[in-house]
Amino acid sequence: MKKKEYHLIPEEEKKCIWMTIGLISYKLCTNDYYCEECVFDQVMRNEIAASNSMAVSSAAASILKKEPLPPAETALFYHRYHCWAKVEDPDEVRIGLDGILARLFSRIKTIALPQEGEIATQGQCFAHIMQERHILQIISPLSGTIQNVNQLLKKNPQLLIRDPWDKGWLATIRPANLEHDLKSLMFGKKAMDWYQAKQQVIAEAGVVMLGPDKKSLGRTLQDGGEQIAGVADMLSSEQFERIIESLYRNEDPAA
Image (cartoon, rainbow, N blue to C red; front, top):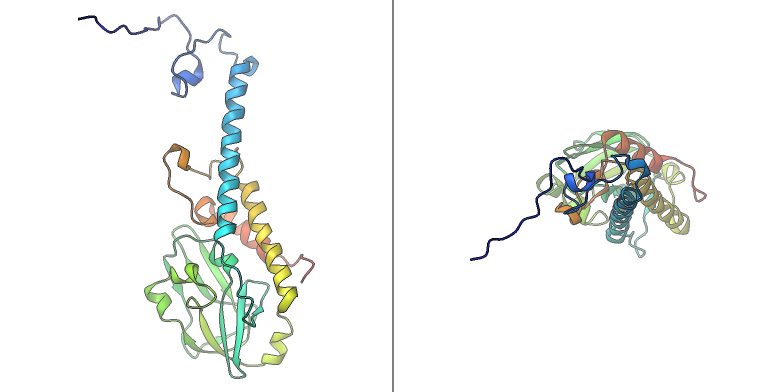
């Protein structure tokens, strides 16, 4: 029986660095390890950079594609801190988180909602979303007294991600001065222009922060990782705070 022949590399031969890390099967170094002058090394680095850039862009595009749009048939008012308000009657306003902030997360650990009877103030924090790596303050779009909170979110916080416009609502408020507060909220075409502008902020910021020179991307589908479901999964705490600041910044033409 003929024995298999194996190509053995003599110890004195210099291996290419791309061979030692397992990306190519066989190539000897003929450039005395001066990688910065090696054409093959530059080609390999360009290929990896292009692959990582495509992975980040695909992730951002996928997030925007899945991000639920505001229901056009529903009269919603929007606060610049990404909460919506639906006036059900003068003494009861339902509030929730818009789809842009909801889609930042893929898995929510818990949602800390206020107690019934507590006072909420427009422009101030009244609840928190807690994930494994990040905590998001939720800013109230109105001032008033909390009447009810969504009990379903306590048992199933993921409902906020799946259906932020309907079943994932946060609370109802008895407004203290509804007419006054609504004047500072966005409505109709102005709100939709603002919303689309903020969608673009997420896409651009994600690509910039998670470019090929960043380590935050982690494993991708090409190397056995899991599909990324939310932007927050890819961001460090500092990057997450920068994303939130850019979303809260009042510099769009619709505002």
